[in-house]
Image (cartoon, rainbow, N blue to C red):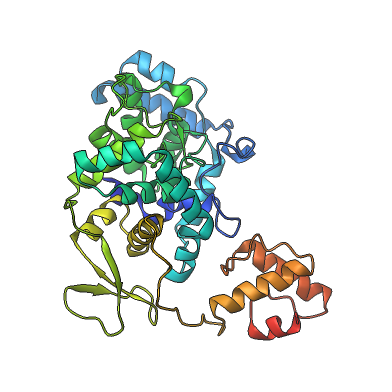
Length: 381
């Protein structure tokens, strides 16, 4: 396989988190969120139409039938919102502290424990078959789609063809489009049900089409590798398959938080001044799913929390404004108490919190900066 899921990029894969907090950029469109945004619906585009026509002339070389092309492109079209999101996500960056505040929030831990309990039998069977810890599988499910609640409603054919036409990563997304059409041709799903994120990641655990073709499995035995079903079994089994084939070692932990001054083995400290982690080869297997230390730590720590462990013991240093997470939480709470919508009180300073700061600054006659600060915290009382 020429392209693996790790090449999909941290910015795209973080869409699962983006769907779960108003303080993060737009990503997956929630299946329960009241429908698609207007810019994620097809609009006329002559250049796109010409590109699709040219693609269809070379499709036979990919082994795609005319019937598959007709079914796949019926109702598909150019999605301007996909291009906007692709441009914006490349600049996205968060500290590990902020990432873990979202990835291992109290809400996600509680939902994870409930999801684990509901699917305990399936998860135990998958662990026995593939050797991958049941909690790790559950944690990936939680980070990718909030345990299936936010799988995305964007047409995968529209999304991948729009990105292939755009050309910034045209070759990559043309391969994703071809793979998506082959999935349709194989009969695993119909075109109207093949939905996902704005970038074409699909199902409960957000497989890109090429990874689906290589790793997805039919766990339920109904003849289809149905990662779109309300039943997450095929998705969870496909994730276990992916990790097993990415080098997961049965019976070995992903790693653990390391004590002060830890050394020996492989110890990493992704955020200067923050906690350190002693990681194993299974940490690298998780990174095959998403090539990011923050993501792999998020999966591992969420898995530990689902299993009953407590929060990290170590602390993170103050941010560039001199504020700790508790300071930022206090700031959000005080703004909320005054009637300004911060989008939550998790200590993560996102667009809504910045808008609330700006509104307070304007109301109180201060210079409008939208930036958090200890001075602002004191001014809020």
